Length: 346
Ligand code: TXA
Ligand code: MG
Image 1 (tube, rainbow, N blue to C red):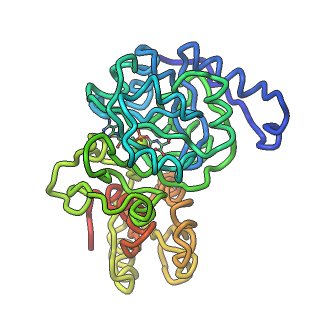
Image 2 (image 1 turned 45 degrees about the vertical axis):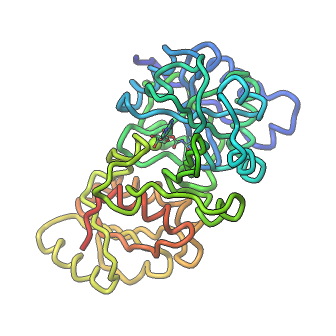
């Protein structure tokens, strides 16, 4: 499908305090009527369509070029919407919802019939989350239907944290974009499977394993998160993701980066370094991008995808990236960096 124009609705958060938000009402109506519309959440921009409308859902897969075996997350505004979507709400899920919803935690449940089959890619489970973003919540309320939404990027590219990123990837491929400014968390939601027995963490994200275990005790972690040889339990985790056009290498020993930069420049490449504000002056590369502050990982998460996209804008051919300790939010950051680098390390 190709559109003459992708409609942009610009929404100022303060306009949400008013009773009427005509832009959001229109975008919601479009979703309800089967169109695909991108919208901001607290994590990244989502590409939303009515989760009960198979044709609309297929348009998401087409627009993104997404493999059809990769299921989508369903977004809701109220817990009561779960009644039509899931078979049961296990006690673990209930406790997590009470603490973390609305927020960046997607929970996998046994699904009911009625959800468009492509949403769940043929699985008997469905991932659901309630986003913590005033524009998203208002849009979901106005739409009145559950909204399936993957990240609003072309498949394989870094997720969008601004409406401009969405526009870059999907202009004329989707009906509209609600522009609510840059997103806050910057990385996608944590995905946890609560559909059977001990919950299993499938995708690390803004809510850490430690935060989850504080509420429901010990959980399992998909072995594929620790070892590249294992097949992941969540279909989407097996695909290449977040990749810039240049070749990206992760470098654990920062001291070595300057040498690699020197060698790559000598070989004639346009060279980039992904670092943090603390070290931004340390490198003599063609493009040095400071991605947040190393001593405040939330700022790194927030700018990671924007930084990876900047290397494409600057036509960088080889990128050397500093790495982070796999603790707290560092686990999610390193998960995304390792996927972006397809595990290439120096
Ligand atoms: O923060 C987010 O989660 C964003 C915003 C837009 O909400 N959405 C997002 O969606 O990241 P997406 O499609 O890029 O990632 C969904 C992930 C994929 O890895 C997918 O395989 C997994 O969730 N997933 C969805 N349903 C699943 C299911 N029933 N079983 C296992 N994994 C599932
Ligand atoms: Mg995605």
